Image (tube, rainbow, N blue to C red; front, top):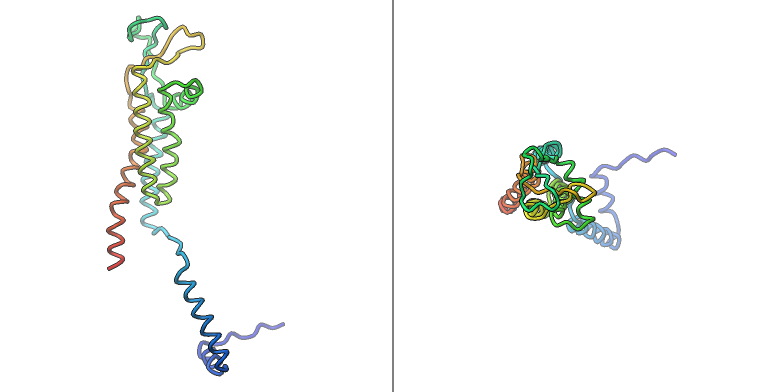
Length: 214
């Protein structure tokens, strides 16, 4: 079966004009309904290439900071006997610098034992939620998730200055937080960067809408 040749626009108009009045009315109603559906149908938002490149750049920078934080020492602990009254170790060299990847693992263990400083671990899933909503241009959610990650991560970790952590399975010694190292601040900078860029994106949105309306 051979394909019929497609009609030109003039031929379609001529055939439509030759239709009976009843058929013309039906055709007009169908065309009107089709146009209304196209006007009311939700339009798929497309991200301009330049905007998408910027988003990817900020996201890559944030992920880079997060990865560096996992590899660097984040917290410096003193190792003290369990029955020790002071926070300083008897041996000045009896300290331990814990890397970010170790903190991520021990944070999960701390949650299982209901340790208060382990609350800071929740900054990690909040950070990933922040990244996902940011690339989707859901700036309000990414800003909230990023700020929450910074506050929870800082507050939970800072509480380790007052709450001692077990340093071994036998309960012989404990960790007391002595210092926040570079890796810790890079860990907080990762969600902080996304939150900052998200807030800037929120502030620019009204300007874009007013420009489009003009």
